[in-house]
Figure: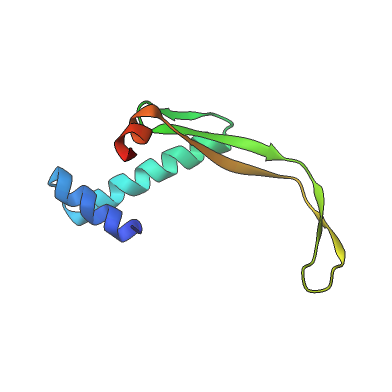
Length: 90
């Protein structure tokens, strides 16, 4: 499922127009991104939790040349599925 499929599904499920559903989907994504940028955790009970983890700098290798390279430290998003989502899949 891609973004357009998600927008179409939200529109069908809620009775909203596709334009309104697209705005709603984009709004949810923006709210999650802004919260994570601010260092907050986004907890959606029954669905899951979005967090930000700090990844330390490390050494890697270029697979083509075998040359050692430095990989910079970064912040990465993480998602942990909640019980409701896990139960829905099993």
